Image (cartoon, rainbow, N blue to C red; front, side, top):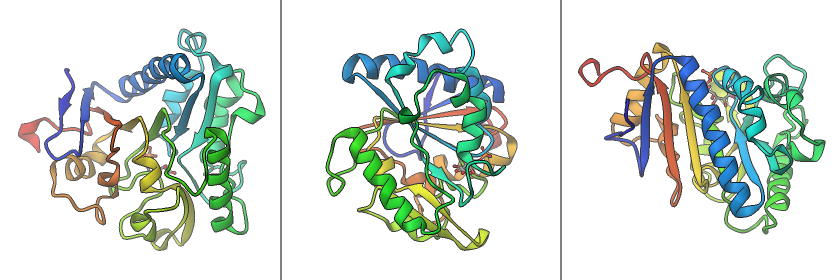
Length: 259
Ligand code: 6PG
């Protein structure tokens, strides 16, 4: 199905409706291969931020195996994380742990190429600031300046229209200066590390991977509903110069008649 421009989606958002979760995962993996080649050719590196949750796992697995594995020059790839739970990397809920099992342990990456968010840190605000410094060092820019442009940021969508760890009604939605924040999520009685809206909006490319009927209402609200980022935080992702792709399956994106 040809990509469509979503009515309510901000900016140049393109929506591709794919048959099922496997097709969404394959499209996400293919996008990494394509954008990595372009970024490495243009800038000598591919700086990508992975999303968490369950949806990206299969996409990472597909990226870690042939034929896609050999299409990426892994020596030029720099891996970051768009958010992390307040857990250690070996915890079942760790986004890093999921990516480590699905991709990072299966492709040739040196330790310095993978930048883990320290969700286990006792002081998450300090961990957020330290991660922002790590990003600044990788991009060779001042940490106090405007946020750098990731070549690709993967994102998911929660059933409440959150993305990364930007949840409805949480303080991080109002962040306009920091690149990385420790965001208290009262509903989950936890604090989570997350890219901020400014850092997300600096990206060259953003790819949302969304699958399943459970996401239908949230996806409709974000793409077709009124602009209300406090309720639908994914609407905040409007790169000034970048492109947003929505790779969604048919179950998540009902046909126009069903909406
Ligand atoms: C996280 C993610 C989060 C996720 C959505 C969708 O840490 O949980 O970053 O934003 O992308 O909650 O999660 P699923 O893919 O598991 O539905």
